Image (cartoon, rainbow, N blue to C red; front, side, top):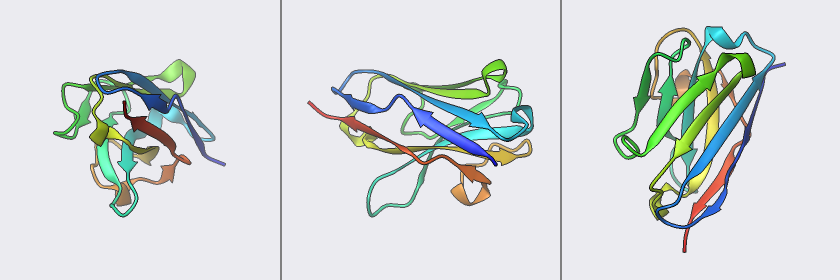
Length: 124
């Protein structure tokens, strides 16, 4: 079965950095567009970033553009989210997602598989 496993979350001070990882298994990694979303209690799941199957194209939400970088390493079946200049409003549970096909969708409903989520807290 398909599994997406996030790691790398935790507590960081404002202005700090974290790198999230998502290891995928049970799917043909090169066939899947990958995304990162985040959610705080009471809110809908929010798009953060997406990356194409080749890794050659990325898309970011306006709130993280210029601070976050998404990448993928096919040999590792892993995607990464490098988060710099973190702000308290970046605090959320972060989810990795996968969808079959080429389009970098920004809506959660378009993704086929999800990780269990990992907490990121930005606080002094």
